[in-house]
Image (tube, rainbow, N blue to C red):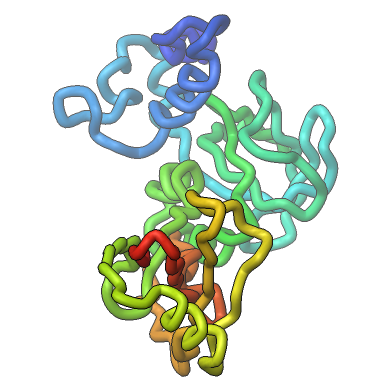
Length: 244
């Protein structure tokens, strides 16, 4: 296992790539064909010790004590184990957290962890548990990547637009805006010209938001432009005969 651990450090352990190296340490022990169609465990199996590594498996545990060793129970049933690891886990290790790693049964309730274990983000726990049920070999890679945060918009993508118009009577336009319901003058904003004025126009509020279909490991967030309720449009008439 020590020889295998040495092969897990292709990036320098110190310096600007330390976080990348730590991430790659874990990714290489995920069950993924990355070396000529083989997993790293298969590609580097050259000795009797590697045969033991080939018996390792990805698993999840509920943290019951931060250790070391880490006191834990199996993710599915209350089987107490002691987890031994040479690396600090990704994430905040605390009691009650879900920990996913590749491990080797060492007997008598002890498990040796290979690579860097991952503390599953709270927003991804349910999806990672489902992955442990459905495809446990893929759970470590999922725990490393999830949650994936995406934003969505209601309707078309919101973009800024600017238009300039020539006004025959800027003062009349300003007076009309001041008298229009739903239009408020913003006096706290610094405008381009001394005699410019700025108005905020309240657009109709979004009545219903349609969330995208749920995807494993994905957290959807309504884009910032649509979270303003109601959305705001802007008008800034200028007595210099232009309005933006």
